[in-house]
Image (cartoon, rainbow, N blue to C red):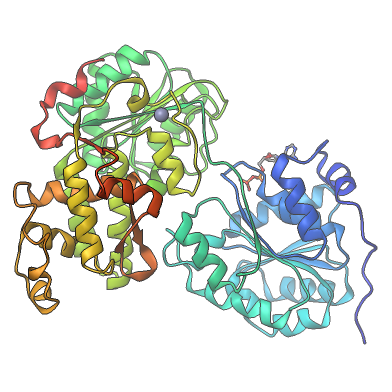
Length: 528
Ligand code: ADP
Ligand code: ZN
């Protein structure tokens, strides 16, 4: 039937050694490779640097036929193709950067069965009858890199990715492997669903970075908090300080220089030469602190960054994880530090509200913001909260501020019970705004229409402010007593029965972080 009979099946371990020069698989890699090499579908979550490419490159080469890798990043594709060619693999990248002549040549090689690996951007895959051509060839597997791009809930949605669901229908006997470095639980489910990979096995590597110490403070005198952190705890060390605006980047760099810190500013508005100089100094010299907007960091591969500071809140917990993840790549102790204030929170909320994004996207962004605030306000181990966001459970770490220093906390059992019963009484089908209205006894149109002004909890929380109730709800989410259903308009639901019932029956107490508005602002600068 015109199909090429490809090269024979090769042992994955042999491919790993012969082609990539690695002695052995990393723990999860071996399992993924065996699974996919045997023709099964997989979803793989690994942090950046975890070794995702091996997960699809090795089974692609082990199985007969051409492996097709879908990726949204042209530079990355060209990079990998170059490395593979040097290792003697016949690889090519079909992207908008190819000339018509190059495209013809690649498609000829595909037909003759000469290609081991074909990298392709999602839009090219769906163009010019390429799928028809692939149906006539032998395809060893489809790999979908940066798979979070298929989900509107990820941070990098690409509409073209949606059409990749067709692969499963047109190539039912070809294994598919989706890989990504960022996906919270709901994004993960969405990826599986959108790509038609519901039956695929999920392989999830740990996202923990045990050598990073997490520290978060309520913003008081932010400059003093920052200089204390750098000059007292990290003098002479390399680090990154993130600020939201260019203006603030420059002011903060000036301020740090006056304190004797070797600080340089970095943002997109500076001359290319100035930026390049800052970059080079940071990489080559010891003890340089770069004060930057988030434009700085992409592709920064400096192993000995000892600290990362956030003077403004990042966009989401995923962004926070990525940005703080630039610290301590060498595995030695590193510390990350963030200050947050209520005005930052209000600003971020307004940015979401004022954006032109469709309402459903805004809703997801609001939820992400809530998770971030839950992390800031938690009384629990920060690592537990951060990893829980990625679906991982761990013991208290002993290496974050809440583990190391007692948190100013209050008994929140009564508030928690009110909030949980309000969520329950409104049928677990409303978001935080409505639940707070009920607690505060607000007769909004929605409250009246649903008859929620007749509930027993209606108006029972009038002794607390609206802001405080939102904070309580976030903390209950962070503690797992409440869940936010992202797939369903951010509706609040009760957490697991065995956790919630004892609280409702007052058999378990709940600890909440004290209301930050009632804290002394200087508290943040004192060492416990
Ligand atoms: P990711 O795509 O997950 O960010 P990469 O696939 O680029 O990670 O791999 C990160 C680094 O780890 C690369 O330098 C790669 O050569 C190395 N690596 C991957 N797998 C192994 C292995 N089994 N043994 C040794 N090094 C590996
Ligand atoms: Zn901890």
